[in-house]
Length: 130
Image (tube, rainbow, N blue to C red):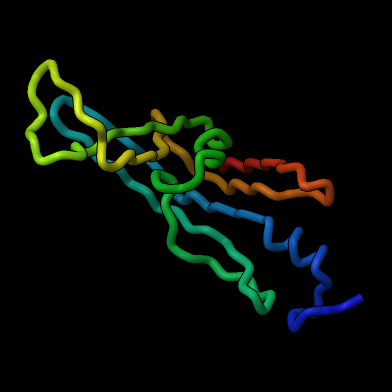
């Protein structure tokens, strides 16, 4: 069995590297009249190549779709811009140049959400709300 510089074999490293952890300290999207505001205090935990674990700044809103599903939210796709120089005209559609996908949630989220793969490659999701 060949071990890497982190002391793990390839199979164990693949399982470790397949772990995704998001800590949503606070997410709130509030709309009222013509105003809206978003509070998104989220971090993501990652394993580095050397095996050390590290937290980094992240975002629920711009996180993966599985995170929205685990948190009870939803994913929204929005089209932005046109692929030509013509201005959009009422009744005429244009092909979007960018499709933006974001996560959203009605209300408040706080918790730790984890997705991991087992040895068969099947994904599992755990959610701990607090």
